Length: 287
Image (cartoon, rainbow, N blue to C red; front, side):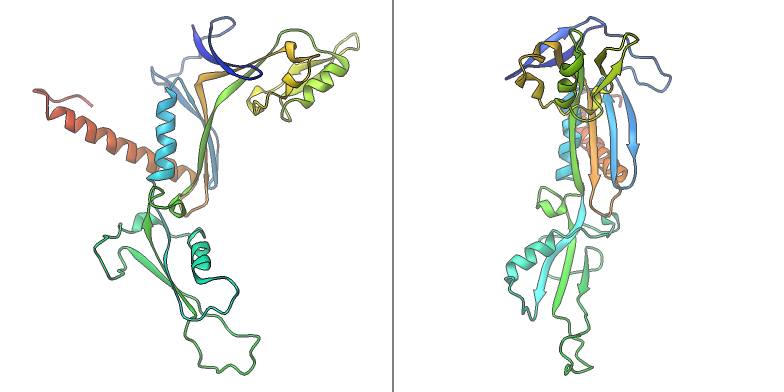
């Protein structure tokens, strides 16, 4: 089975076809013929999963949809009645707009641009009510807020404040030792990679040699190419059909809910495209 790889060299990336020592993936009853997805870790804030056998364009589409089209709530209007700080009104309003809000956007509608009034169906209002502790002469009935916030539903393509979190991906790194590396060279090789990538083991005859422990942790820094004594001992590649996908939430949506919303948006786009194609065909398409 041929596997496409990117060979990481000192100053460039090279496409290569390498069929040696590549095993067929283990078959699974739940795996689809075109590829499979493995969840590595998942909690409300972070999610890591592997797309195996999928074209990188598909994964990039999910990344772009996550950042640009998954909706969240953010502060849109700030009404200041009395700002006595050294921060200008517009700067303070901008900073407030970037504060993540724990308000589920799925309970709200998108605001119509033609609307002039704020409604409960598309916005939430906050009032800042604080007790004065510095001015002991303040009246007890002074309850008017100094600041009024109004936030609405939006998407990341409108403004970065509406992005539900961070989303990125990378290809699975592979490291191959082309020769035995021992002693001080093994220690040097270990320092060239991220923690957990290279391990030093002691053989039965007392030699300390370098072994690949977990290439997944490698950040592909290419530091090894800075050392002439060991740069010929390593071959670095990346598997182009094995993508490590990350989502980090900083909104009301959990990490896996963000991915779920992105998948729904992608599905809607596909249905829309198929519908347009069917308009020009005599027989309906099977979905």
